[in-house]
Image (tube, rainbow over all chains, first blue to last red; front, side):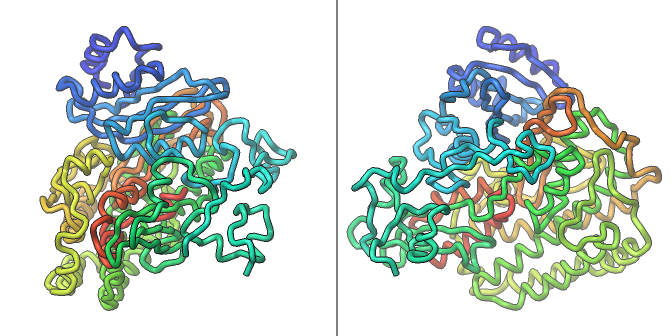
Length: 181
Length: 407
């Protein structure tokens, strides 16, 4: 646990933290509102007191009543992983600012979070599905997406799973693109 | 063939498969563009054409499709299409108990399975506040480094194979087979070891393993050097790699690169030193880096890493303490609600696991971070401007594994 980092974070970001700063093992965790993500991450990335220049992970989380985007950062100035949780995304229309202006590599990480949770990252130039087929309409890692009934211990045990794709008739006429070749 | 060329492609629509099966692999997708980037990519300029590499292509190291926009033989832009190997491992893990999830980790990284199990057990051990016995930590490092050597040897062999050299892969498989056999002696598996357990490892080292390891260590250094000599001074190999896919250090960090690819761009970042875990602080080894950042540098860096791994294996054998290899834990694990992130340095970079527990015996959220995913993303930056043949070089030197990319 890096106590000095805790003091530095509280001094710098005390007014934007939306929850308690927690430390456990080699991790320090702060919670902020999604709208503060660009400012906070830019400060963490640029300011010499922090210099969290490596984005170790970007994950979406569905807590069951709201959505989160979780960033893990590494810095040479601290022995801890820094976990930044953007905490207040609605489940109906989850939106978060993109961090591709700091890390180009976040583009695909955000595409993955969009594909799995439906979180729309504003500012990502290429936010489309990455693993699931393009005509897929569900978001598989959301908690209201149940596995098929062969997973006996899943909450969906005994019920049909929720995979649905758009029927061909749902595609507007004239929008189908044709190949030159 | 169908008369209507582009049906709305859907797995539910049998006509797609029956009448228009070629349409599935048409480079231009049969739906309107969803983003500006897609619109821009799939609009052809004057004299440009599309070429599909994959999903079944020998040089893609897995089931990957790369759509290339070409001007003659020069690549203008690329669009990797993923998901052919997507199994939804994260979802499966969120519906399996903590012990079961470790078995799902192996196929993610089928060339170096131990490195995907490792962050998962580390994250769980943090959730449970378990102290791992020191002998177990040493065994993890020992088997992990063996696995790293086998993975790097395979990467070197396939690198040459992708460029048309058949021989090096045969020689690297001789060494890899030795390593795989000795790991099979303690894990019972040749590829998907499933060896690490929450709180330790599945079994202690045995006589079969130790005698094989002793035999192999006596000649490993020489053999690796001999294999490398096949390629290092091969004029064709060097010419095809030098200056291809050059990444500078700032862009590499921006692209979230880790592992040998990042170190070949001159950044001495290795989680074994940058964020020490297990018993690596007690071991003496160097972190090789190279300044060039091209495909040749990435290849040469892997050879340097193999030498360091052999050093670590040697030290592990001398320093390994006696004792138990498993912590005492109940069979049914219910960690207190909490969050844990663990990351380790694998042969391709940082493998990370973010596990959230809600107090039940299944992880509430299980996030897998795979380095190959981010290296593959850089195709769109590195491939344009090069030839199609350079793309093979680039792909081989970045060494992505599709199992982890597609999850």
